[in-house]
Amino acid sequence: MDSNVVSSEHWLGETNYSYLNTRVRAMESKLFKSDEYIKLLSMEVSQIARFLGEGNYKDEIDSLSRTYRGVELIEHSLNKNLGNSYQKLIKMSGKKASAYAFAILTRWDIHNIISILRGKYSKATDYEIEKTLIPIGEIPFSFILSLVKNYSYEDVIKRLKKLEQFNFLDETKEIADIESELFKMYFKKTLDIFKKEKKSLFIEFVRTEIDITNIKNIMRMRRYGFAPEEEQKNMIEGGLFFGIGDLGYLLRYSENDFLKKVKKTPYGTIIEKHWQEKTLFYLEESLEKYLMKCAKEQFIGDPFTIMPVLHYIISKKIEVENIRKISRGKASNLEKKIIEDSLVI
Image (cartoon, rainbow, N blue to C red):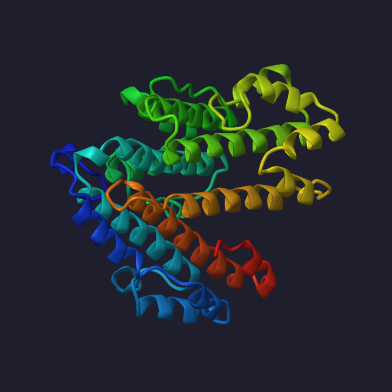
C-alpha cells in the first residue's frame, strides 16, 4: 500500500481525545506565526528554501534538494510535508474520527484528479502536472502518478471510471463539466455522511464552501454569459445562505438586486469590494481567504472533541498556501504588499 493511503485499520481503535489533542497541540505549536511570514517576505527564494530547511520542512527539503532547486524545491517540499503531516494526524485519530477521513482524504483525491485533468486538457508536461499533486488521499498515490504517465485526457477518465466512486464520469465531456461533477459528488457524499450533524461546525464549514463555490460559478456566468444547461451543471445543493432555489435568481438578478441580496450574507462586502474589477481573480482569492479564516476561527472548541484536529488540518493548509504564495510571488517579482495582502494571517 502506498505511503499516502490511510487504511481502515488506523480507524479501528477508540479515539483517545486527551492523547490525540495533546499531540495535535504539539504539532500546532510548530506552525508558522505571523512574524515568520513577515520574515519570509523579506527573503529571496533561495533564502526561503534555506529557512524552511532549517525548520519543520528540513526532511523534505533535504530529501528533494538533489532533484529540485528554487521555487520547485519549495513547491515539492510543501506538498510532501502537507501529505506527511496529514498522514501522521489521521493515523492517530481513532475510529470516532473516521467519518472525517472521507472528507479529508477524498478532498485531496479530487484535488489531484482535477490537477491531472487540467494538465492533460491544456497539454502540460508530466513534470508540470506532478508538481501540483499532493501525496495523500484514499486512492493509492502510485495510481495517481500512473495517470500522469503516457495517458491522454480521455484515457485518464476511462481509467478513473474503473473505480466505483468515479464510474459516473464521461470522457467526452469538457474539463469544466468534469470538475463540476467531481465537486458535486464530493459535497453530496460529505453532507450525506454528516446528515445527523446539521448543526456541527464542520458541516457549517462545508456548507460555506458550497456557497462560495456557487458564488464563484454565478459570478463567472454573469460575467461571461451562459447557456441554459450550464446553470444546472454549475449549481450545488446544500449551501449555508443560498439554497438551490436562490441560485437561479442570483444568476438573473439585476446588479442592484444581486448586491442587495448578497449584502445580507458575510460574502456581501467581499463581492461589493471587487465588483468593478475587470477580472474575477481577486474576488475568488478573497472568498477563499474568507473561507480559510472562518474555519481557523471556528474550529476551536472542546479539547475532548474532534474540533482541535480540524483546526490543525485547516491551519496547516493555510501555512502551506501562505508559503507557496510568498515563494511564487518572490519568483514573479510581485510587490511585497501584493503578496502580503494575499496571505491568511
